[in-house]
Length: 112
Length: 107
Image: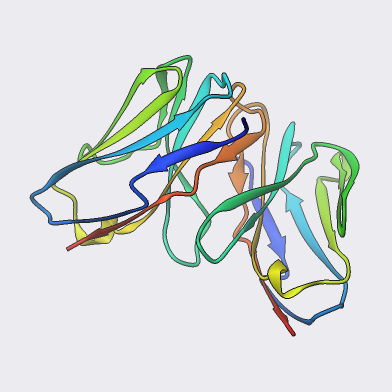
């Protein structure tokens, strides 16, 4: 199974809402990533988890809070987002940091 | 960090044409991937190719690590090849994405 799944596919939320994005992989990968992608731009790295520990936080605002409950799951908790946070949020995994990455289909987020 | 430059930024082809996409790196990379992002946003793995040449159907890729570039060849293009092609590469850790090549294939 070389699949990374993400839920939900689409999410619309207000600036006062709290929501979570979920990502799951069953490839036994030990590195998992969150990326943010705006239209006509490349994916932009947000967070990296390696062996379930946060290893990279690319200076992301605290309104984004990642969580890695176990080696297969990665969550991104959202709170008090701004309209400019509207984007495609992509999850990826790899065997270890620096190895081939596999991406999920993404969650398209709209903040009103 | 490593800088990744992709060319051309935009490409328009007629169905059946061939094309070459290029990716230049500012420093040596230990991991290098080519992706195709379809209109729905899904990033599809094309090649993991830190060095050498690989082929998969109508697509092939070559990375010359010593000269810090990689090429993606698309032959006999089809309308389903439309989308954005990204290369991503890194030293020993997290890959850096290029800005992509936007490809449109007309029937």
